[in-house]
Amino acid sequence: MMQEFRKEGVLKDGTKVLLRPMVREDRDKLMDFFSRVSDLDRQFLRSDVHDPKVIDTWVNNIDYKKVFPLLAEVNGRIVGDATLHMRRAGWKRHLGNVRVVVASDFQGRGLGTLLINEIAELAGEFGLEKLVSEIYFNSPAAINAFKRAGFGVKAVFEDLVKDLYGNNIDMIVMVCDVEARRDRLRGKGLA
Image (spheres, rainbow, N blue to C red):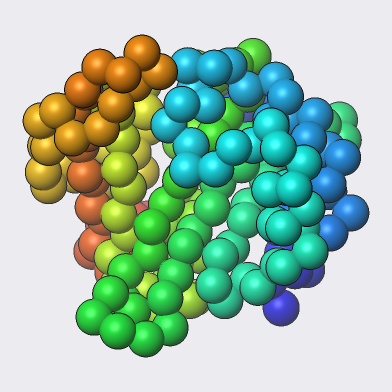
């Protein structure tokens, strides 16, 4: 079902992007993509994406009902990665966590918003009610991309996380109500 998902998107500059789930054969493309992610952007990722073992674990243990990895490709090259993390049990089973990484040369072109919007659309198919994202406070582009996709700021945690240099920095938690977002889009004739 989900592994067959394919969709074309268009960025602000007219560039066509293929959106599709990650598959096992993406290992080398993922290694290339993450090798191009800047240290500044990489510091906010939860895994050491320069470690081939991390990528191997991802591609060899795909479970779309636990983590849905959505890739953005241009001319066969991965330029963006959005993941939807889910739980099947417990008090957070209705929540999905969203994480997004966009290649430096595709930042500011609408790719982040496109990926977030697509993940938000897919969330309903997974039975999720709310989406959550944690964002570095001093990242206005990321914050705006999530806002455009229907997320709102729910909390600011001062000095909670550390940057590359060991300095404490603030983290924002943004949340999207999946059904309310869908209703807003229907009202605008977009859903």
